[in-house]
Length: 120
Image 1 (cartoon, rainbow, N blue to C red):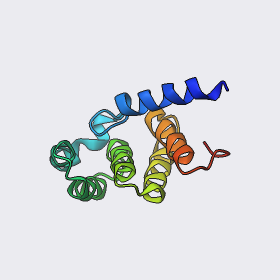
Image 2: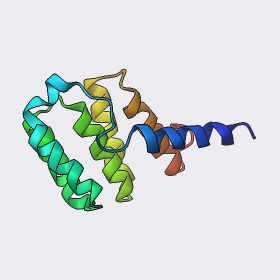
Image 3: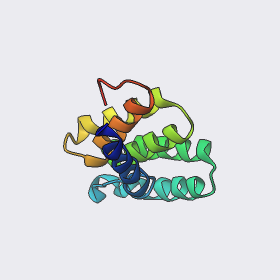
Image 4: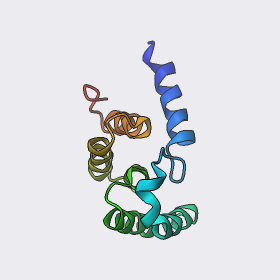
């Protein structure tokens, strides 16, 4: 089956390129949320995922156009095994930036992990 190598490549990209603090960002859209982003990244690195999610949500409230916070929130939701919330976060990021690779990649992986192969 030819999809297996593609899936492995996608998973590697997911783990390398789309985890919190590595998502594509638009710095000017996130300037007002820097404090919350730093706190979220620190919580995530301590594996305190609930706090990380709360901090990313705060960052989004402070800077609604900060797609970095949305993608990272989705990644945290995936780690919390909350695929519906992750999908919503990635989709929201894509409404703000339809070309955002990290959001597309993570959305596809989340659909795949949720056995929604037609959407992946």
